[in-house]
Image (cartoon, rainbow over all chains, first blue to last red; front, side):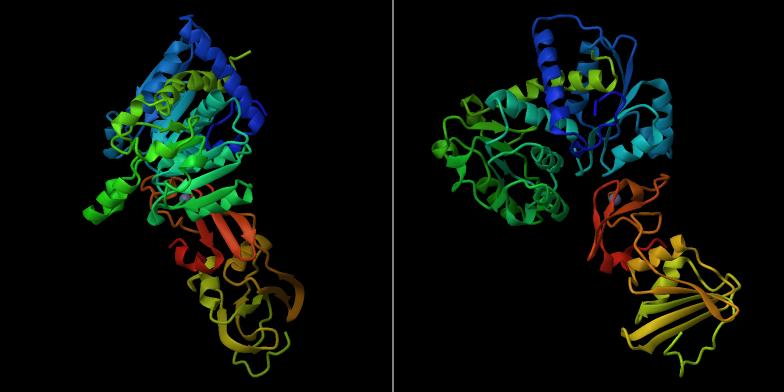
Length: 310
Length: 158
Ligand SMILES: [Zn+2]
């Protein structure tokens, strides 16, 4: 279908062929950055970063990607957005940013905000995370990382662990995996944080081979990839219960004792204490590598959507 | 209009008769149609009438008011068995069943309180697509939240 001029709202809007095209451009971008080549693909372009909810990492990543391509990033962050609190609504802000820029990246705490922004804006819109709904560019990075690590996503056994109900990256990741043929996807979470019904329904309908389990221990030896998300304290009114769950789902060198040597651990970052710091130095830890792929992937996406990639 | 004998409401000369409404749903149907009674035309509601097909049914008669197919399709959300009779000079000149529209805009409030369509001071109209027909499942086009057909009445916009 091609990327030029297209909105990036849900990972489900993209086919496997689209993703493969994106990944090959990301390969090029990564190499160019590594070789310190100055790219001018976005020279004369302005990318508006409407971060109406703070997210330093995602914002810096898009900002860096824009600058690496020679473009200018116009940042409208939650600080500027306090004017919204004084009464200006999203619609008016978006109309303004749309006229000042060539593309809008929107981050919001409201589910569906990206689609709403795309309804209003004439220029392409990229969803930088809308509430607990979707975070498609993070998923692109996650899939790209798996692809780079294993050569192919087909045939992998993948464990997804943590807050599967509310973590914004999870629904998108599972939707994204439906574009491939993993051997199995284990959903590992406490029972109250299982995936939302609509997500389960969609991925089952699309044929993703999932199995919900409540402990990592029994299946750790099968995994090629373990994708970890944080379990938030707010989900547990009882602090004792939270401590118990946190402990039960923490990734430690001891838990990894039975892991396959090929296992790679991914995490969308920032992480706090869901992964033991001692794990950072083990060969399993791939989350820093994953984070490094964020900028080249987003460079590729910007260049494709703005139609400057030839 | 068989099976009408014994009802307290007389036939109408011109207008719309919504028949075979599941018993007890007539008021919900009026709500979906946005009919409050202050429009001026006469409205007759019969609830829990005998029906050969349904056992009990509700009937609504709207005098001198003709509903379009598009308007009445929304009725299918709460009363999928309803039939519409357009009456002119005591005769049924048109008769059709209701069928669910593929997309419904601005009628149902998204059940997700954090959906952009629920954010104050925005102009995002709620929009649902028909995901499944039997049983009815609607999906918010913005946030992906779902509404089951049986719950629709809880989420009708005020
Ligand atoms: Zn919604």
